[in-house]
Amino acid sequence: CFHPADGMKIFASTAPLMDTGNGLNRKDDNFGNLVRGATDRIVADAWGGYHDAGDWDRRIQHLVVSRVLLELAELFGDYFTRVSLNIPESGGRLPDVADEALFNLDCYRRMQTPDGGIRGGIESAEHPRYGEASWQESLTVMAYAPGVWSSYIYAGVAARAAHWFDKHHPEGAAVYRESAIRAMQWAEAKVAEGDYEKQFDYTPHGINDSRNLAAAELYRLTGEKKWHDIFRETTFLDVEGATISKYGSPKAYVQNDAAFAYINTNRPDVDKSIQAICGAALIREADFYLDAQAKAGFRWIKHPVRPAIGTFSASNECSYVIRAHKITGDDKYLRAAVLTCQIHTGANPLNMCFTTGLGHDYPRHPLQVDHRISNQPAPAGITVVGPLDWSQFGGLESPVCQVSAQHCYPDCAKWPIIENFMDTYWTNLMCEYTVHQFMAPTAYIWGYLAASSR
Image (cartoon, rainbow, N blue to C red; front, top):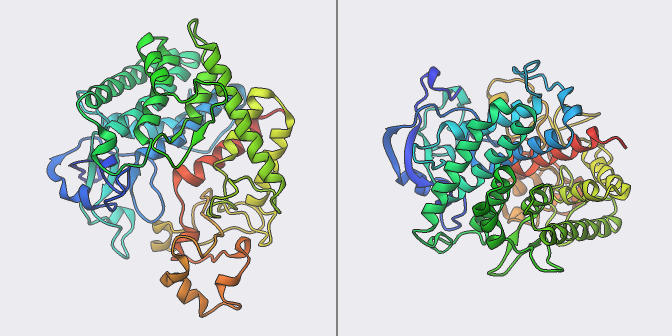
């Protein structure tokens, strides 16, 4: 479905993803600017990529999946050469994790404009019409306009793909190298034209962090001074004692991915002092989470003040612990990663794994439209949001909570948070999933543990 060969037409919008609620603009909803920017121009060859729960959106944020799969392929090349994911490409010249990463990345590469800009994805004019499966989509479907943010994100991941090809299959590197550089050059030219951080009420640091990461990856790939200079200009990890991230201020940032990329850069002019600062910051962050884990009843890894959403099904924060293990080789980090995965995979009061198709019990009704409409079991391998605290995100006032309360004793708002999971299709706060927030960290952590020798 959603392939031009099936008659699907994807129309160009004049709205970049970052100017919408699906991107960085907190003053817009998911569809407003996208629909207002609709045109009758067809975007050719717009297909592929991953979509989230409940709809068919492909968004540049989903490239985090490609990033972590390529990282696993780089860190454990021999292991993942032998792993079959049972995909159409299995048995080909590339490892399955690399093929899977490229399936996602190539969706955006095919839509790259002649001058290098990267469209932020593909989205329908609204959430799916009730009763329609993906192959029955009757809404107008649009591709976002090229944007600075999407171009930086793409440039970083395409550069990583080119770097992997350089090491393992050099014949495939050129297409991703050239595409990454064109995307970066386009974004740099646009940034020089205006202050994108102030154009809308953007999520703080979104563009700068993406630029920093893209520059780190391009420097790692090419060794060129201009990319190194941009990395050093945009990093916050250039002073002793710097933290890997900072929230809640005009100078907020989250630069853990760039830090790890720079640590793994082997160039003659690499700044050894910045590498040391990056490594120390990652290790301090990992130790912070190990301390928090030791105080948690079920040994999950999450920030102590972050609301409990996704805590029991996946752990974004575990990436710090994984990377600290890679840097130091200290088994305490590996043990911590194993512990946090236990609650995700069934060592919890519900005896449930929160990834479909795995374990003694698992969700049967994720918010995945096609299985619902076609009356089939849900696909295996979907990590849902899982249990959460109803008091967060307006949940207690939501219709779902109000209806559920009529059928639960005691009132569902009084349930222990870790037991508060309702495997019903329309309980979207629990049964929804996102590719980048839940499935990507699950794949990364499980992949790392599977490939680790001890």
